[in-house]
Image (cartoon, rainbow, N blue to C red; front, side, top):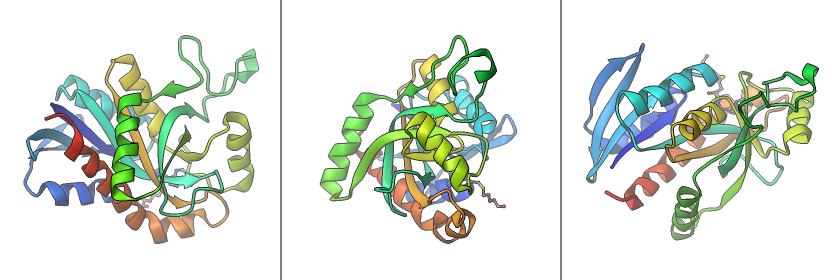
Length: 230
Ligand code: 3QA
């Protein structure tokens, strides 16, 4: 089994590289990919760089160049649902692109012809995540994640995303990775730990909590890898 693990920023994959200890690197498509064998599982690890375009490129490269059979995303997110506190984990059951807008032609937000407003993640991987959460005695929530090419730090934009998509958290890469995986029939899992609440304090809290939240997410992802088929 070969598994791809994607983060967006260096801090999001650093705890994973630390855990695998030894790896080789390959430069492909203007990015670095880290290959490792961790407890018998072949891993390809990369941080994509921020946003939907770079994460699309990374997911596609992992599938077409490296032949990964599953993709796990680990990182941080802005919380929308007030039940999600800084440091809490959320697994996406579905994701949308909050900044994709051809509503001028009567289509719903996040929809373009040939696509769908929401893309779903793999149910078996989500089920495994809840088993891991129970075993680790950590709380894990499931919900909708909205993705867009914006660092949201504005209550008005946040409330638009909440009311339009009923989203629980937001970030900048999940939906694009999920769309690639859905199109190419690759099981996908998107996990995020909350770093901020996407409002006026967002950049301040992000700076303060991104590293600790990134580690919470990465540690959980590695527990899942432990339980995946070899
Ligand atoms: C933000 C990171 C991007 O990869 C998306 C974090 C956490 N809080 C968010 C929010 N709005 C949107 N996304 C998020 N990630 C990149 S900006 C900071 C760059 O610093 C999730 C996320 N409120 C780089 C150093 O200059």
